[in-house]
Length: 122
Image (cartoon, rainbow, N blue to C red; front, side, top):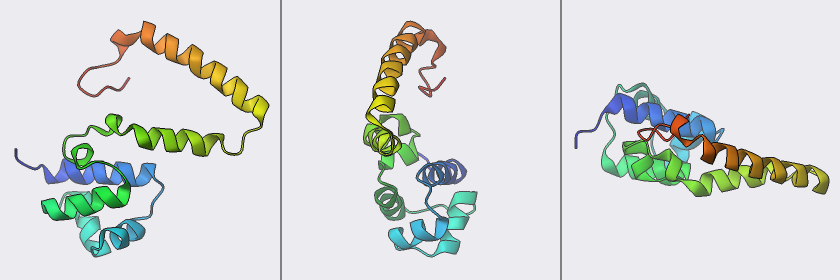
């Protein structure tokens, strides 16, 4: 398997932005220089496997999600984000949201052909 530096950099940046984590914070948590992280995200430097592992840990994601783009299998991330979004909701708002989630889940399952198998995204 060859490592596409631009693609890995793009995925790292996407996950970092999803986590609302500044580049400097990720660099510090990964124990790498922030300029090196910038080069990685731009695809100008190819990170070693050791660096990819450090970055994945700092981003609380899998190495696979960075190498292969299987971010969708990182369900813990979605669960944490859902919990965070619900944290400031009233019980009434939570009940409405959960009812809507049931409706959306059923709708998604009925329209499954709209989701591609390659990316598992709409």
